Image (cartoon, rainbow, N blue to C red):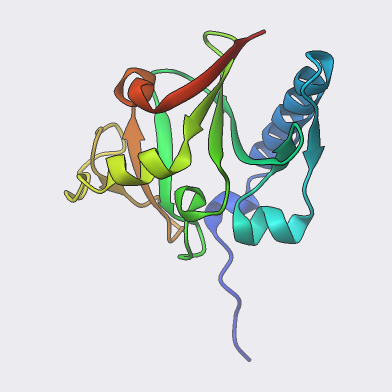
Length: 158
């Protein structure tokens, strides 16, 4: 009998709850300002890294519940597959709780940006290096909001 890999972060029910609340807030806000957002299917969300279709036909991947001093850019997901940056969304949308804003970033520009980082992090607190969380197969890069400001396309304060 083979065991199926279960990432440690998938076992945290609080993370799931935070994600669901963040998605609900985003949809409500996009609808409120008249742009609109439709949630994608679980399959599209998981394999294409598209959480919502915003407006007429703009695919976005939402990263909710973040702070400007700690943004994790996902190169490889928790299962060891392509991360959200390598998905099919046009924009990565980050919800920054500390400044009450949704910021839309050009996903392809973020992909180019992370190519420069090749060093392995020594500590979880390190910035601008490749980090894998214990019990997961992810590869993530910790940056600050100010580091990726050049890739911002839209900002909505709520």
